Amino acid sequence: MALIVQKYGGTSVGSLERIQHIVSKIQETKQKGHDLVVVVSAMHGETDRLIQLAQKLSPQPDAREYDALVSTGEQVSTALLAISLIAKNCPARSYTGQQIGIMTDGYYSDARILDVKTDLMKQELAQGRVVVVAGFQGTSTQGDVTTLGRGGSDTTAVALAAALKADECQIYTDVDGVYTTDPRLILEARLLPEIAFEEMLEMASLGAKVLQVRSVELASHHHIPLRVLSSFHPGPGTLVTSEDKMIQKRTVSGIAFSREEAVIALAGVPHFAGVEGYILGKISDAHIEVDMITQNTVGKNTIDLIFSVPRKSYMAAWNIVTQLAQELKAASVSNNHKVVKLSIVGIGMRTQTGVASTMFQALGKVGIPIQMITTSEIKISVVIDEEHLESGVRAIHQAFELDKLPHKMQISMAETGS
Ligand code: ASP
Ligand code: MG
Image 1 (cartoon, rainbow, N blue to C red):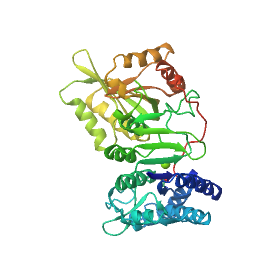
Image 2 (image 1 turned 90 degrees about the vertical axis):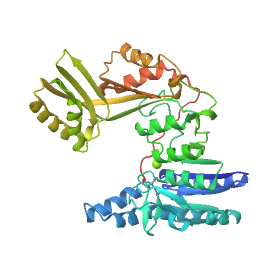
Image 3 (image 1 turned 45 degrees about the vertical axis):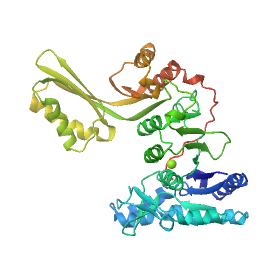
């Protein structure tokens, strides 16, 4: 007998039929003799609907009231699920985050969980009930309702699993697990049987939207095995786990990409010590985040500085840079906002050599010029023209033989916000 925390996302509770479908899945788990805590998201589209309501009344809704409002979506789905379970003779009770005692800090809309009380859940489990808990919400030390940021139900599930020392935390969603790359772009994408916490964190922060980043951090910190699986198709899904527990270590586990990038280049800037800091300081003063940076010292007296910024901040960054170019007497400024960042992620990179060259050669063979490169311990990123995204991902996917992984993919839509 095990203690399992299951989380069902917005599409998994998106209609009454789907809720009934989950009831049968929960009953299956119960019949195996397991204790079960179930976390649910709001019904698909509900959180977005609530946010729009608030915005119609105020462009900047009061933060406390905003959380009081958006947390209600999860209360509807938890109660509906409990009603449906009880109607099928499966003892269950729904609880809000406040009732359970999910204590958070006071940062509305982006609160962090500080502590989770387990007494009530343990009492209910001892009575043989399924405990259904509203995801995404908690209570501040002031006693106010707080929410955990978009996608926060994942984090609720992991936090409960950690507090209860659960055997596994299962995240049921509408994709079959974590793929080598986005199956909506590349048909050859393969389901990964397992992935390390660190790889998942990189993939998530690079734009893979399967899990909220914070939930992966939390699971990694508390060594909670996380399984991502589909609530619609049977299958083992993907186990997110510690590196030392992995059966097979691949050099590269996945390819992530982001279309949110833009590149700005300042060429022929007269060189003085600190010029790079001066230029990037002006950008960060405007609260624009710089991602990748390359600097060339052409000749002796001038430098070229190329950097990437989020595409949404590109106009603001461009205005600053054109002024700086005049002030510093740069030879030229240019930009390219139709670029993408393409990254390979894998813990095997730490020990293997030749990974970067394999990636660059694969791009070279299909005629894709690389504009920028950055590397870290388990990741290599390049910036390329957006028009080459698909062929670039495919070439790299083949070069690392990711299409040779055994699992057949099943196409399904990705679960976004609820
Ligand atoms: N309902 C919230 C959202 O849409 C939380 C979640 O689904 O995890 O972001
Ligand atoms: Mg989600």
